[in-house]
Amino acid sequence: MAGMESSEGEERKKVVVVSGGVGGSLVARSLQFNTDVILIDLSIQLCTVLLTLLVAKAVDIKEGGVVTEDGNLFPYDYLLAATGHRDSVPRSRRERIAQYQEEFEKIKFSNSILIIGGGPTGVELAGEIAVDFPGKKVTLKFS
Image (spheres, rainbow, N blue to C red):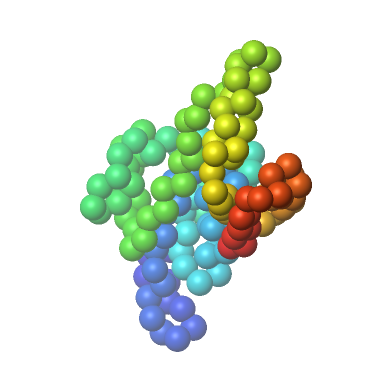
C-alpha cells in the first residue's frame, strides 16, 4: 500500500480505522476506493469490505501510528477511532424497566428532543415521542 498513487498522481492518504463495528466498517468501506484503508479489530463479523483487514487488538495510538498487541506499528495520515461505547446493559427486567423510566422522565421534562439518525429506529422513536408528547418539539437529524 505504501507509495500507491491516485489517478491524479498524488500519493493516496493512509487511513487507519480502529474497530470493526458498524460505524467503523461503514466508514472504512466508503473510503476504500480513494484512500489506503487498514481496519484494525478483534472480530471480523461485520467486515464485508474490500480493504486491508487486520484482526488484532490496538493497544496504543501514537503520533506515528497505531500500535497493535503484537508490537506492529501502522502509520496513518488520518485515524478513525470508532471504538463504540461501554454503556451498561440492563441485566434484569427490573433494571430494564428502571432504565426506561429514567429515559421517560428525561423526555417528559425536556422542551425539545433531537434524534440523530434517520434510520428505521430513529424515525420510529421520533414518531412515538410526537404521539406520546404532542407538545414537544421533535427534530430528526439525518446524516
